[in-house]
Length: 275
Image (cartoon, rainbow, N blue to C red; front, side, top):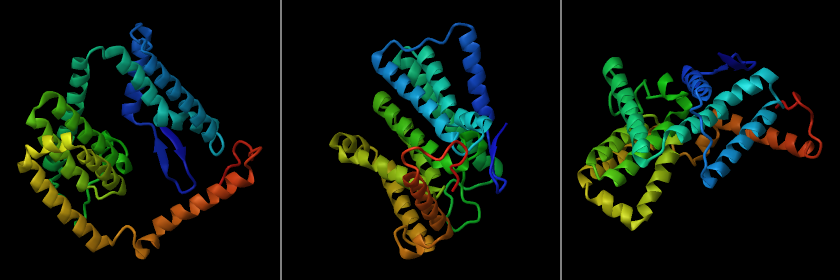
């Protein structure tokens, strides 16, 4: 379903996954299976989620039609709100949660291996090759692929801590190599954030037990960063800042803040916020 098409012809769509989540929520609601959380902490989170959804619709109205505003926010927040109600209604114990997390990891692993086996892609993708790994439709937009993978690494490490099973560390290593093969800024930032776990001595002691996994990954990471800088330059270099896509982002931010400060009190009206 087309949610919004800009002047350049780029179309944002509601995915099949989103529609399946909505359908599941409607069916569970009809059968009385949706139960609002009783825990006060989850109730506060629910209020924040609903407030964010309503505020997102209002902000979208400034530069989109009413239909596009609602359609875009379905993909942006409401599908996750429906998923929140589904999960809080179904998951009652830690065992239930672990089953869901195992399912997500299994799906991610199958997704990676399927692309390697069916499309003939290498497990370790070189930055100099023509086919840099991007997200498949099943895992969401290509631009968000690194973010999805970062979540899967975090889940793998969590289950490793809970179950003490080395298979989860191997899965984290598999997703780690997949993330590096995307060569995206988001995945690089995600890896930096994940590396912060090593600040805690307890976490380092856990990982040191499995140096046969950590050492090859560290060598691969170092080689990848060197290749990235050699071919694309440092992300902090002057040449990088002069790239067209970077300049476009800087220009958009400048226009945005100018517009906000010019109409900071009464605004400029629905549908008039154009850059």
